[in-house]
Image: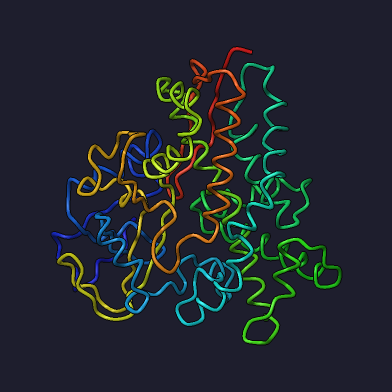
Length: 400
């Protein structure tokens, strides 16, 4: 099913492309998306039914332009989670434009700043070591369940004050909301998350515990307490953002190193190069897609966009742009220009980037310096998905 094409879109610029289920996504979403670089610099995608079709720029230069111009392109309603429930509140600060965006960004940035992350690092390392100890002697594991999701999600649940006995419940909600692409299932998950976070906020208002949720519900902006919708919008964004993106990155990173043993061995021999390697891996495996809506008529790369049109900003299209990166599909750990878009760009650059980098660094250092060489387990499928690109199933093995 495709959305009707607006009259202002020339027929030659129309190309249906399903970022969740285009042919090839189930094997490698990045290679599938990268093939778009061989076609139009920008096209109209009627397969994006949530927005009735969107413009899709394929060059990093154009994607950065959209992301860096909130005067031309709005974030309002881009996630659309409240609309799934028939409500109208914003994910904060994701769905806010200036000047409101800056006010809430200033409120939240210190909570995930480098000094804040530095204080969390010992606990992050403890969680990482404990999970590795559980599987070290087994010689094999399904990586995503044993570590890829359990590690970053556990860190974030503790940071936010979420009960760890509901881990499986949260993972189920997250999958339905972000990966099912069935509006009924997405809506049910959206309601379940909203209701849980509303009750948690009430508990922390009555009995603050010092966790991130407590800080948010007692915060002020412009000298006033946050409204219920503002608290809900912040907690919802933290919840959804904290349960998926780092796990997705870990899945792709560990799958790559399981298949490129030369690079795995090089990093084992030179652990001082791991943090630089992470930037190249983030470039090669950028997993997020975001959207913007035109506030006014805008021309971009020959496309005559109209006010109200939506624009898809797929991070991997920018990070794999062959006009900016030589051999973009290659993981080149000596690459000098690693100006990737894995954490977006502009005013909405990912608030959680410092925490994400620390988690990725702790994980790779621990596995590369403390675990035997790992490979893909023979005759087991690797399951990936499109949309927010991620790994669902990854069997690894090593000499126990």
